[in-house]
Image 1 (cartoon, rainbow, N blue to C red):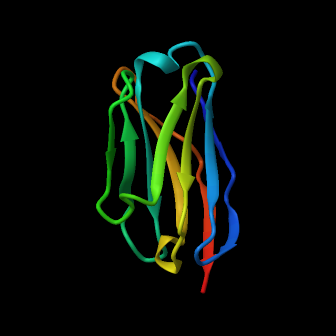
Image 2 (cartoon, rainbow, N blue to C red):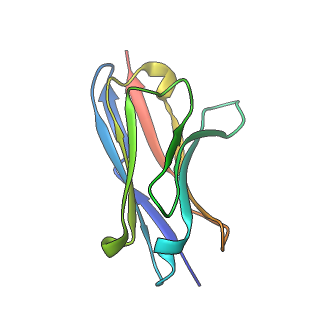
Length: 114
């Protein structure tokens, strides 16, 4: 059974940076697309960024130019580099594997203070 484990969340001041990691168990990581989603208090979960098995990326307009998604297939890990963070980026960030399998991680909290 594939599991996703996120890490790297925490408290940061506005304008700061964080890098989230999502490590996947199993050997099918490289053939699946991966994504980062977030859910702020009282709001629905929303797409942040996705990356295909071939490395094509897609971003929400709200994070374009500030966030970068990448993947290391040798380490079965996907990353989300978040720069110029804003208080509105405060949310629980979830990792998702999709394509051949559908798996969600447990989430990691990112809090951006003003």
